[in-house]
Image 1 (cartoon, rainbow, N blue to C red):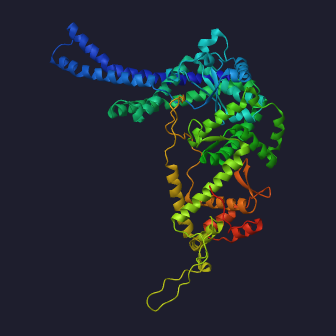
Image 2 (image 1 turned 90 degrees about the horizontal axis):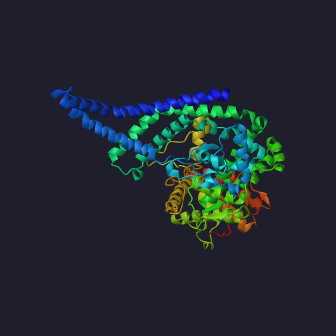
Image 3 (image 1 turned 45 degrees about the vertical axis):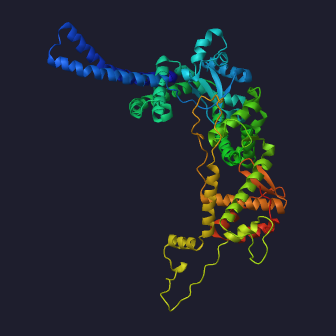
Length: 590
């Protein structure tokens, strides 16, 4: 009953969208209808005289112009390519068990089966219509791979594509994935209704027309015509936005109600796994993958890394201990014939979407395995950042030796960084009879406002050298990143617009102080590796880490911050002594 109510609500909203389309068509045809009446009246002798003659001359050109404009708008709306989510296609030959599970699920829900399956590097699943002519004709592999039967080809060719979040396949068990996909697959039922399908095509066409009108490269018409096209498309889109949103809500409600009978108890547990997979995926991308992408390397097994990250989380967090027992069950990635190849394709797509990397590997954009990550990414990142830091110091004219009388060391040292960032003691003002003395700073005990006292303390600890070095580092990094990135090759068959990569940037640009902290930390790690036998490591939840005697150095960051923010090197120097690190020794850089 609930499914019928949701479907009925969706159909009523779809009709509302189609009525808006009909009204727009009627408005476009109204001047032409008036012109036809006036011309017919003249031929029949009913509408004669100077007034009707002038009306015919005035209305007929307007009707022609309106018809031409309406024809152009209708053509653009019909032919404009709707946005397509970047995905990795999964043919049935590479995942027969996965297709069989989806087909059985559709049969149990009594809905049409999706026409194909694709993976997205995100923690979400949905149905996507790809029947627009610009998406290409359905092939035999894409059209019949789920329905299978020859008689079902027409239905399969128009059914939407099932898009599955790739982290779900690697972290979830087979039963959990089935429970998560049940309400998604159930959405093919309402989607097959002609009114809902027509309303969706109209809304997608308007959205694509707005994109065409706002992109000069995609709108070959004059600027005025493009502006008019965009204005009309936006007006229609605003008119049907609320109805379209309520239509999709009704479709989702109907699908969820229909899926209630399928694995309901398991769906509750599966939803917990959805949240956990999202947390592990986000942490892996921001803490582990992003440093590698910035170094021109892309981890080729991101989905396998999700399992490792969540397993580590289960080991650390007592609340997640129950999830570790699930690892003995069959993972959903076993439904793929070659999970490694699929994981690599999804990992490359993730690098493109979240970082803007090129479509193919090359000398400056190569895959990296997790076993090679510490040496190929962590060690290289630290030495590159340390080299950049010393290069900026050279451009600022900072000497390599803290003692002007001593010879300069043979290579870059950590002592140079410590000496430069250590805030010099504030000079004591001396009174003079030659002129007025500077006003004395109030004692902290005399300040009544606690916030005023805190601001006064910050003005004593401001490290001007750190600020200048951070600004110079930011400028240097901006120059390096301004180099033209390699563009996708002409053979790249992606049906989505990749001119504005990354489509989903992970993090906002780092501040100047964050950049300086990262570079100083990298220099400390280089000194630890070259003088104390430390090693680069990979933490699945926190990314690059320094290993001293096999243990993670978790207390380094606050000591570096004390140097960078306060100009106080004492905590870091004490840590260096305890760890056996020699800051005066030269280190090897890239």
